[in-house]
Length: 456
Image 1 (cartoon, rainbow, N blue to C red):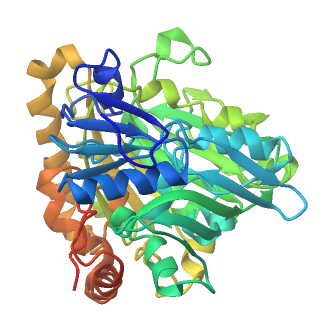
Image 2 (cartoon, rainbow, N blue to C red):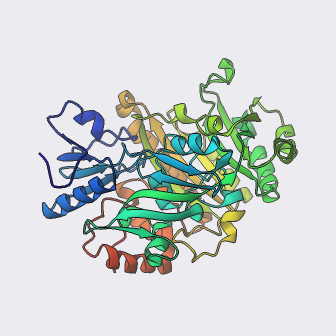
Image 3 (cartoon, helix red, strand yellow):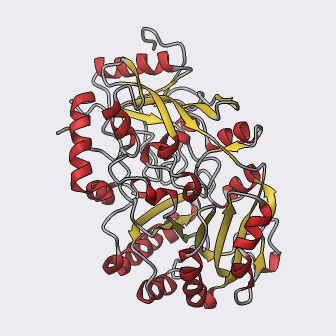
């Protein structure tokens, strides 16, 4: 099979690489596309979109393939696969980076850190740049430098008619606004341009762990600690078991624990002052906060969320950490059946909250924390854990219901049972504005295999 203008690689069901090519990060997703078009550049992407439109094929778009809902692959359609497009070009003088749409955050961190620069990315290095950015882009650097979308300067994309255009503040500004949080609804982004900031290469970063029975005390302390933390300090709370990483004593592996992971976007000595009280609180099981290369820190969690494991997520934004919220988190955080399941809570605010709410399509500017509840189990444990872990995540979310901020991070929405929450991710006003942009650039809803926004 071939089509006009396509110079990439076509993979069909009879190809030896088909099963590998259709696999995504979430091993619970098992879909069989008719065709996988692995693109080598923007021209290939445009050719693939035109072919799909001409043959009325369902379209899925794959960047890093990391979305928990598995939207990067579809049944009986075409996957427009950008995974071979991973180039990163850095302009150190201008402090910008041009990043192809199939790049992973590890690619970006390695290229930018060679110049002592960085931009806000995910907390796992094998996460795709495209999906994380288009949904907003939260990470350790967001309190200092804003979300990934706040650092997006321009994007090149292929539209639903197979044309190409550049979206930037002065070119298609309505589309540029929508791309900054509205997901993959408006086209296939073949490259991004990001602003960079001086960082590293050595930063003060790492987690501190406490025993699970100390969770309520730790969270009450953390509430006050986070409220006065400098913008340079990014923190993520994790509840689950201690992962079996080589840097952690073996006797602690799989022990239930609460952790506060930190990354200080500034001088190491300033970071040591900022985390001093955290490290002194209570009796930590292990303290891994130390100076280390930023790129190494960013990949430190990679082996705790491997490709091919099965995942089920639930998430919500929180207005704060009241005693009642802390009680719910401490009560439900360790009830999962699988030792790989966990909950993670991101401290928002800082630069994220200072940007006007209507400046981008990302809507969670005024929330204090975001929590994601991640059911995780191995492929051969599907019978044992699939139902139990999914039920745990849903019960945990339900218990948080009275304390939710009324919004949710769109990148943390799972599959079918979260479809109705897309509007919640944006609020009515932003959703209506996104629907108007959708009607202008994709009136037929060609790109709908995503967290879909229907054309107005």
